[in-house]
Amino acid sequence: MATILDYVLYFNAGYAGLIVVFYMLSLAIPKAAFVARCLASYICMMYASLFGVFVSILLNLVGLSQIAQWATGRCFKYLMILTTGVTFHTVDPKGILKSTRPAVFIGNHQTELDVLMLGCVFPKYCSVTAKSSLRKAPVLGWFMSLSASIFIDRQNSKDARAAMAGASNEIQKKRQSVYMFPEGTRSYAKDPVLLPFKKGAFHLAVQAQVPIVPIVVANYSHVLWIKGLLFKSGSVPCKVLDPIPTKGLTAADVDRLTTETRDLMLKELIALTEEAQGRKIAVSDKYSGNGVAKATGTDMKVAAA
Image 1 (tube, rainbow, N blue to C red):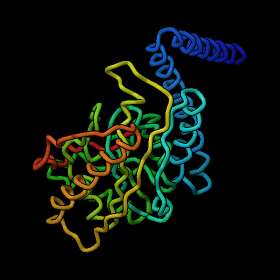
Image 2 (image 1 turned 90 degrees about the vertical axis):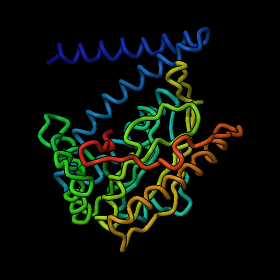
Image 3 (image 1 turned 180 degrees about the vertical axis):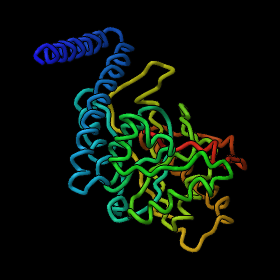
Image 4 (image 1 turned 60 degrees about the horizontal axis):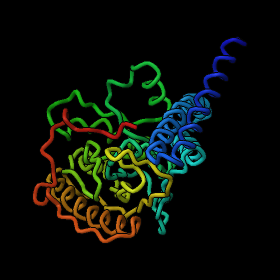
């Protein structure tokens, strides 16, 4: 036992030393900061994941499994602030994150750093979604089940509505909100852009008859720009928009709902990015008129953290 503990201590000391070396090198070679913060992010993710497993078990035992992902995310948030100086701050003057439950929260998807964004923004009683097949996966599946994740039946290839049927029932029964990325993949964009939206999140909200709450994250290429090996400290704003009601809507309304929500989010994204980066941005939406992806239940991407 002592030997294992020794190895853990040596690993942590060596890893921390390596991070410090790259931070020191960044004083002369700025791109070394990219390596330093990437290394710090990986170790923070590892320890936050371990914390998540244990806290999920404990919270499940006391009947509070629905806040496990919130607690795990907050752990990651504080580790990242301490080691990288990177964080996200929430602009929510109406207190929507605390007052709206259940809901389908949706946001733009930029890079892997969005995992930290979730850790900073996630309200209590909210979880990511995952495909049903992950339920039986060792470790990850256990954690997601213990932390009240909403599972989506992507094996049902008929259409998006069928794939979301079970998930909508869970949302209503548990009063558990979910967070999804309707773009389905990361944009890695240097300027504010939204990829075409897939309709799964909107079908889910309509089926569950719960509001859609858009959360717009400013483009943060001034903090993380992978192609340019840029990774700086900084705080990125995330703006919570007013809930969009779905009461009384049906599947026939989903296309319109998706298009209008995307248009609203793109407008806010450009304005929020201009404020965050302190520059005027002229962006044309190259997906204008084609902002809704043609997708079935099998090709929907869900927000897997």
